[in-house]
Length: 260
Image 1 (cartoon, rainbow, N blue to C red):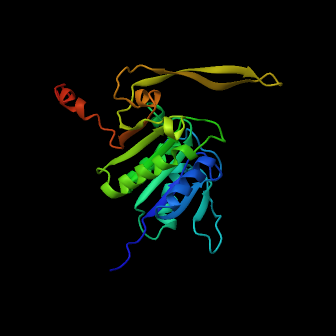
Image 2 (cartoon, rainbow, N blue to C red):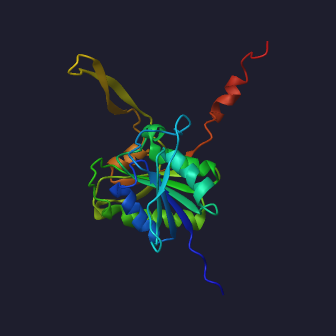
Image 3 (tube, helix red, strand yellow):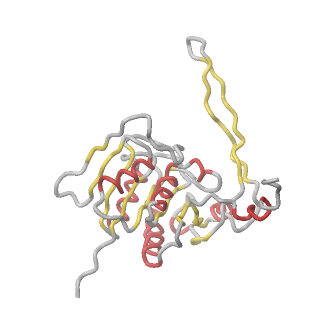
């Protein structure tokens, strides 16, 4: 009987190649499979599904011969990193792509802006099973040790059971100790918005400049949402699809007089 090959796992993020969250994710994935890392060479938070088309791209191999994990830094966005990995680096399609662990929340509407989740979605578009992981702690030195067992559990479940076609997972962890986390909940994305404003300031030369600020407003009181789960000490797992068709609206739109 031949020994079963380890799964090939692509690891990326949006906080950059040196981010502690990425290091934590690499450590867990190294226990599960063969790891290839392709991550931005600088922070790329809130880049969404952006790709680089008006500039050159650079790729640097950081690992040395004999290293157990192969690492590359890319000058582009998280989505660029996935595209580079699939097209230029990997000899075969990976069994899984994991993105993160993001420093900060990607729950609810934040998924739209997230570079972390966009990398996972890009992998899904490429036909690769994918998970985006985020911790509700924006601190650079956040404690990722308490969530490592849950990252491992979720990853193994995905590898064992396979995600539905066209679906990736958005996983968010509350900022709690391992023993304080009640468990994992499959959720829907909460309906929430950012009430945004621009903080106007002046340079020493008198020129106006702006910082985007805002307040997160959760408009959803359901107990099946990611926001509810996180506030009640659960890990939220939201299945995300990259088919943006509003299927529920097609029947109504077909009653309109489009061709008359």
